[in-house]
Amino acid sequence: MCNDYEQHIAWAEYCRMMQLLALDIPTHQTELDLPQADDIRISDPAPIMRAAGDTIELTRMTFAFPPSGPKGGPIFNF
Picture 1: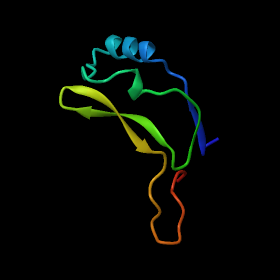
Picture 2: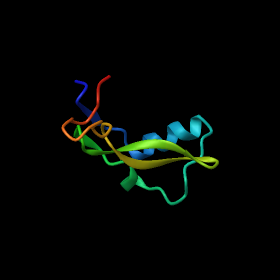
Picture 3: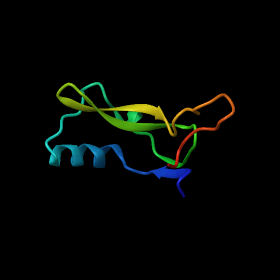
C-alpha cells in the first residue's frame, strides 16, 4: 500500500551496506536511529537518509508532506 510501509532493516545490515558503498556513517549514530517497525503510516515519524557533509546520516521525518491548505490532508501519493 502507498499509505503504510514496513522498516525491517537491521542496524548491522545497514552498516554493511553503507560500508560496501563506501559511504560513511556519523559516529554518533546507533541502532536507535533506525528503529524497526511493522507499520509506518501517514503522519508517523520514520527514518530517512540525508547527506551531512562527508557522511550520510539518518534522521526522522514525517511520512507525507504537510497539507497545502487548512482543510487538506497530508499529501503522500502524487
